[in-house]
Image (cartoon, rainbow, N blue to C red; front, side, top):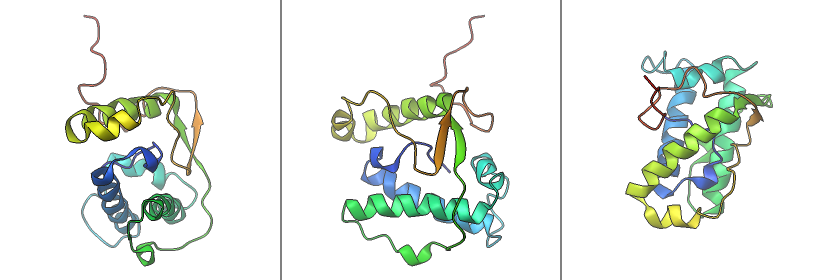
Length: 151
């Protein structure tokens, strides 16, 4: 499961569809509708929000908005509506880590999409998140993209 801190506009078609499915799964987990993925680390920041369901609904709304902008037909009725969400803090380190992770994926999966993002100086966060200084989130499962220690 990957619930990106990055704005969904940076995802290629395959990535955006995957994000929609994974965020719907996260909504089901947070709402107690499924028994799988209940301890997934990506859900920590939603669980720590004042209302996990409001947070995941806001997260899904932004994905839906991006899909609509691209003329995709994601079913908005699948989003469980709640109270307005309180922004969730995300660190600059997390955003930069995810940008590296996404660009590595796009180099293989959709180089043309990656080329369209080449002029980007600094990626934006998903609208749910408020960016603050800090390292990669402690819940992140780090891949080989993270620099090795100098031992």
